[in-house]
Length: 115
Length: 116
Image (cartoon, rainbow over all chains, first blue to last red; front, side, top):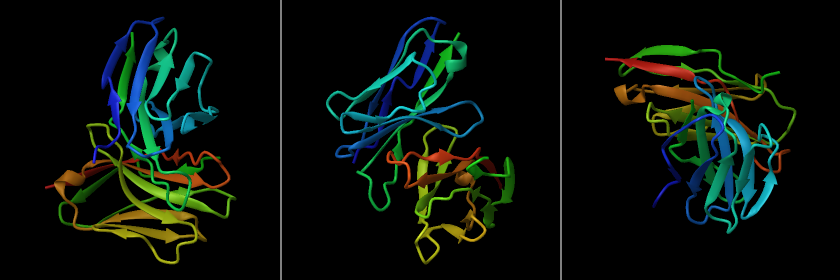
């Protein structure tokens, strides 16, 4: 079956521009996660949805970051007024509801470069 | 304190040999899960293996096995019969049940390079 897909794969933005990153989770996965991965580091948690409800947004670094999942499937991570420090790979992952294993399956990521 | 520590920034292994990638973790949660992911240069995080804190046996998945030592809080990944395609970054991650969202906390990763 299809895995997690993300678009665009690459995004170059000028400082101050707004960007929107899309994630299509695996069909039937109610849990969706966004992570930020800086160059040479491990991913860091940004936010978590269960269906359409955003249950945890403690990892969002500033109020410029906003995520939504209005119909409980596709999710969009929006970054307003991008800054150079926002340059990173943004990874989306999905999983079945919390349970025994809850393995998160990741998409290919969106590499954001802010000039 | 770091929750997940991977002390080996880079490792070399000869093709067809076994290699162990180290991971130590820190949690006071009695129920947790440990994961290993592979990240090739293409960027996608590929799930390899999972170990639950209450699992009695070490997890195995094909050429991957997890050497779980609970008292020492270590969860080392063993790759047997290394292949050139195993060259990638490897990340250890933990999920603590006290977090309702089941988010993963990752280590800094180990870059594995397989020599022909």
